[in-house]
Length: 105
Image 1 (cartoon, one colour):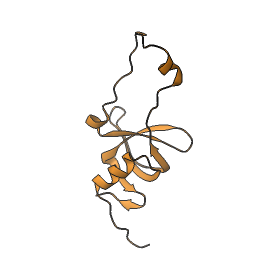
Image 2: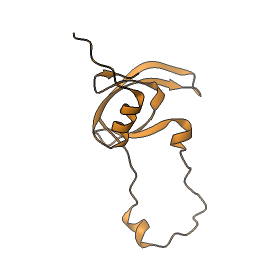
Image 3: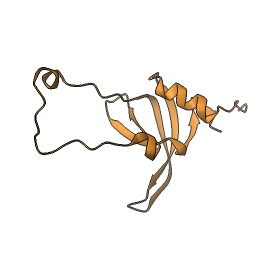
């Protein structure tokens, strides 16, 4: 196997945030359950961008008592990714170790 050229963290983020499909290898971590350390492989993943639903656009916004929580992706260094099976996963961008077959530096 030939060594691949590494990719910088900024270039990886630029490509990920563009919405183009990519392959990721991420280290799992869960501080609440004190678990993790396993490598998770995501193939053909894209950044998930939530689109407003049609009925939300047509109806005036009224207070339903429950507001959605702001995920603070910038503060938490996380991104939501959309997998080919339509599953949405939240990943911590600092735990991405491989991007499109290139080591992240």
